[in-house]
Every structure is written in C-alpha cells, then in structure tokens.
Image 1 (spheres, rainbow, N blue to C red):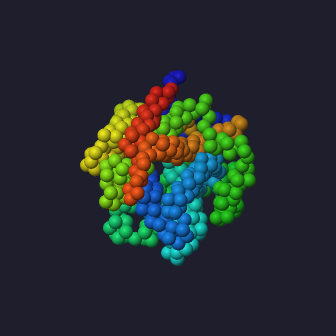
Image 2 (image 1 turned 90 degrees about the horizontal axis):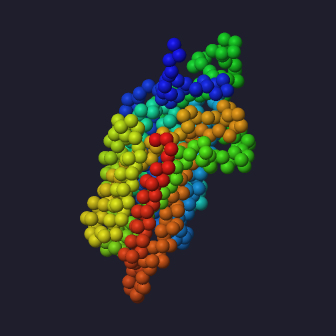
Image 3 (image 1 turned 45 degrees about the vertical axis):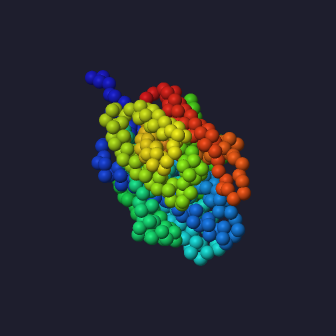
Length: 501
C-alpha cells in the first residue's frame, strides 16, 4: 500500500488530461526504427548531392544563359535554402497543436505528407524548367517549394523520435538517423556516377522517387502510433463509436477533403498568427528549457566549426597544391569522410544506450577529435595526409551528430505541450523546439564562413603577379583552421552547463 512508482512507470495529469510518458513505450526492433526514420535517407540523398553536384552544374548553365556569375547564382540558391529552414519551427508548432478530424490522421503524418507534396511539386518544376532551358526564374520558384517541403518533412521526422521511440533506444534511433543520412548521401553520389552516368537531368527523377518511397515507408510504420498520440491528446478511444452517445460519428466527422485539411493545418493557424506567437515559434524559453537551450548553443558552435570545410577546395589548391581537377578530389574526400561517419554513428548510439544514456563523454571525444584533426590540417603537405585527417573528421562527425540529436531529445520536456493543455497558451511542443534546434545548424553554417571568409582574405591575401592564380597564404588558413578548432572546443565546453544529465 502506498507504493511509490518511478517516473518511468507513471503518467502525469494536467488540466484533467492524461499524458502517457514516453518512457512507457515498448521497445522497437531496429528495422522498425529504421523504417520510421526512413525519410532521413531522402534528406541525406538530396541535400548533399544537390549542393555538391546538381546546383553547381545548373549554375554553370545559368551563367551561360543569363550572364549571371555562377558563384552569385549558387550563393542565391544557398540563401534561399537557408531562408526556407525557418519554416521548421513554425510547422513544428502547428503540428504540436494540430487537432486532426476525429484523431484519424495523427499529428505529424499530415504535415509530413504535405511536405512531400511540396517537395515533389518543386522537383517536378525544377526538372521541367531545367529540361526546357532558359526558365531559371521558374526553376528558382520550384527550388523554393522543394526546400520548404524537405524541411517540413525533416522536422516532422525528427519529432517522431521523442514521440514514438522509447527513451532506452534514443541512442540507437539517433545512430540510425545519422546512418540513414550518410547512406542516403552515398547512395545519391553512387547513383549519379553509375546508373545515371552523371546525368544531372535524371537527378530530379531520382530525388522524386526517393522522397515518395521513403515518405510512404515512414507513414506506413509511424501512422498508428501517430494516431494513438492524437487520440490521447483529444481524450478519445481508438474506436469508431462516438464516445458521447454511442452512435456512429457524424457526417462532418466522416467526410473531410483536402481543402478542409489545408484549412485546418495551414489556413486557420495563419489567420490566428500574431507577433507574440511568431516570436515564441523561433525562440526558446531559457528558464523552462535551460538544458535544451545549452544543447542548441553547442550545436551552433559545432556548425560554425564544421563550416570550415567550405574552404577545403581553396585549401587543396593553395596549400596542398592540387591543381589538376581539385573539385573531384574534394568530392572524393567528402565521400570518404561520410563513409567513415557511417561506420561510427550507429555503434556509438548503441554504446551510449548501453551506458545508461550517457551522451556528453562521446560529445567531448568527438569535439577533441574534430578540433585536433582540423588544427592538424595546418601542418599537412600532401593529399595522403589530408585524406587521413578527413577520415578522422568524418568518423568524429558521425559520432557528434548521433550524440547531438540524442542530447536534444534527452533534454526535451517530458511531454509535448500543445496549446489546449496550457493555461496561458504559451507552452511549447517537441516539434517546435526541435525546429529551433535545426535552425541553429543553419545559423552556425552561415556565421562560420561569414567570420572566417573575411579573416582568410585579410590575413592570407598575397600579391598576385601577371599570369599567376590568386592564392591565399598558409598563415591565412592557419587563422581559419585555428578558429574552427576553437569553435569545436566551445561546443564541448558549453555542454558542461547542462544541469541534468
């Protein structure tokens, strides 16, 4: 009598609503976790090859057709991609507060399908505009829709980890996520160089097929749990009988079409959108979510550090003195690094779960390896030496990404708080917080080159004589690489401020 139950054994009640702790979820087989997170494969396949292969080739065509410099065109597409990442917190907030008709649609799946529709539509427009030629404004518009869609898909997929994955399998899930991202990237590179025979036009078809297939897989394996979560939110039983009078659901509950769904998912939230709500969508309450804010800050520093790879092409040319097709050499180094990451991410996730969910020691190790390998690049003199260091960077990168996502999930509030559960309507849900966490990656990726680029120019600029190529000095790269090392160390040290680990 009066036996106390542990946190993992009890559910909480708020305003009369029963909440089921995520720690009570039954363990899932590894293959099912992989299918639930399968859209990560599409994200990795598209994002990596798009910016390394597809867009640079298309920007060459834009330069030939319009006279706009290819670097300017590529910078414009990167800017569009960055801006569209801002959709993630807002879509996450709407998803957290979504009340589906009779709970039959779930919370995340409708937005994931909507994201897939945006992505496929954008890809079809891009493919058609590229095939016809000269329709580059239409191509940019398709790219905009494509990027909005893929970011919505990714934000919904990330939210499925705290929604559906047991706490004891968080490391495994995030190791699977990192593995899917890396293998998706390698799959894209492999298809381009083999089956597609380096045909850029065919890449749009590949992207479309991968998005459709992975979205179907994720929805197939995640839908039932998503619906169950929505029913718990609405205090509904998983039955077709109306709980109020025992009769069949009304006709308004039985019939709803695409327009009605768009109205409830997008139009109504947009109409209710106020400045305070918009601000809350893109901020983290430091007092309520202190540890999550610290993890997000650490992520920003990490991406500031890893963004040094933006300058690897120039480094390879100026310091290692690779003048024969350096672009291909950089692509090869990227593939090798990702392969190394694929070998570390999943075992590290399993190891962290086996050690009772300890994440920070692995992050510290990853940051030391990242910082050490980056700083060692200053002393590189051959391509072989750089290859070894890139393998170390890739392995450490896989380790960090797995633990970073695990820490983010670990520091989320125990239960998602939708607007109807909150007394003041100011509560925040998992998807919205993870959306802000995702934007931190973009912020770090932008700040790194924004600070490092001018420093490289100021310190490394050299006098160029007639007939010589413009090069930066080793001193400039030493400053750049040292700064990147400092960012990695900050990423690790910031985590010491986490209160509960």
